[in-house]
Image (cartoon, rainbow, N blue to C red; front, side, top):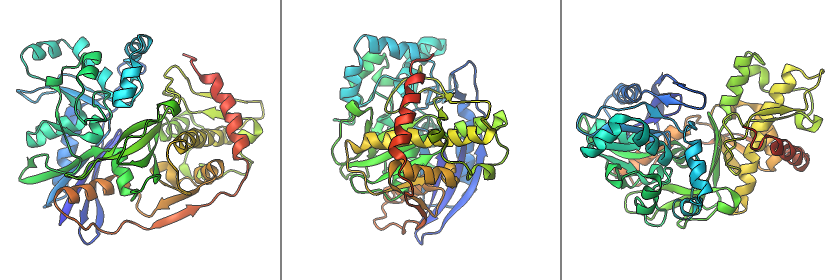
Length: 471
C-alpha cells in the first residue's frame, strides 16, 4: 500500500507519500498568502488553499489512499449549491471575536463551554468565528434562508469540494466549541449559545475511516495537524507527550479512553483520535500562540540574520540576568487564556545587545512551553521524556534550555515531518491496514544539565504578571 498525506498548515501545504515498506518521502509544497485586513485579523484564500491541496495530491502520482490534516480552528463558509466560498478563511490566530467571547464570558456562559466542550471562551476556537460570518457577511444570511449555507473548519470545505462529502472528524470538531465531548455530536445548547445552526454544520465522523473519493482514490483519514503529530511521534500510552514548535508551540499528551477535565489548570481536554470502530482516545492540549512566529518577527526586526546565529550563546541564560521576553505577541494561550496580554521585553539596559534580546526570546518560548507542561503534569503523569518536532526543534539552545527548565529529557525523532507521517499512518489504518511501518528512531536526546529551572520559572512568572490585561 502507498498513501499520500497532505499537511495543510498555517503557512503552507505539503504532501508526502508513505509505503507499507516504510518509505516516507516528501513530494511537494506550496506557500500561501497571509491576509491581514485589520490588526488582529488573519485570513487565507480558501480557493488558494484548495488548489494547493489538490495539486499536492496530484503530485504524489498513483496512490491507494489519501489522508489530510488541517489547521484546527480555521473556518470557511460556502454555498452548498456552487461550492463557492462566501468569505476568506478566518484563521485560528484571528482575534476579531474577542469582544463577542468576552460578552459571553461576562454573562457566565463559559461554564457551559467548559463543561460540555471542555474549552474556554476564546476567539481561538471556531464557534465565534462562524457566528461572525453569519453576522457580518450578508450573503451568509441569504444562503441560510435558502438552506444553502455551509459552515465548517477548513478541511470540511476541502472534503466537500474534493469528494462531495460534507463531513469533519472528531478531532477537528472538538476544536470548535460546538461538539460535546460526552456524545461526540454537535451540542444543541452550544450551537444555540453561539447562534450557529446545526443544519449548517458537517457530519462528525471517525478520524480514520471513509470520507469519500477523490478521482477514484478514497480519502481515509482527516484530522487536526497537532493530533496527527501526536500520532506521528508514536505517542500511545497515558502521559506520552509531544510538542510541535511551529508558528506556535503546541503540546499534546495522551489521556486515554476517558476525558480528563483540565479546566482548573487551564488545560484543554480534546480528542486525540478515533480509529474506525475503536474506542475514542482523548488527549490534553495546551497551546502557546507564538513560537517560530516570534523568532521570525525578531529576524524581521533585524535582531539576527541567519538561524545559525541563534543556536547557542556565550552568556548565561538571560532570565538569570533579569532579562525576560514574554512571547505574547498574539496574547497568552494556555493556561492563562488572556487575549489582552501583550508581548514584552523587561530588564533592558544600555548594555543589552541584540544577542541578549534574541536569547531571551528563545528562553521565553521555552518558559511558556514549560508552563504548559507543568499544568499538564497536574492531570496526567508526564513521562521522563518529551518528544519534540517542528522548525524550532533544530535550535540547540532551545532544546538545552527546555530540558533544564522542565527537568525532562528532550527527544528529537529522526523524521522532521511527523505531522504528515501521522496523517499517512492514520490513512493506512483508515484503508484497512492493521500493521503499520516502524516509526522513526530518535535522532537526538538532550538531558537536563542545569539546576536553575525553579529560579528561571519564578522570575518568568513575575514578568508574565506584568503583561496580563495590557491591551
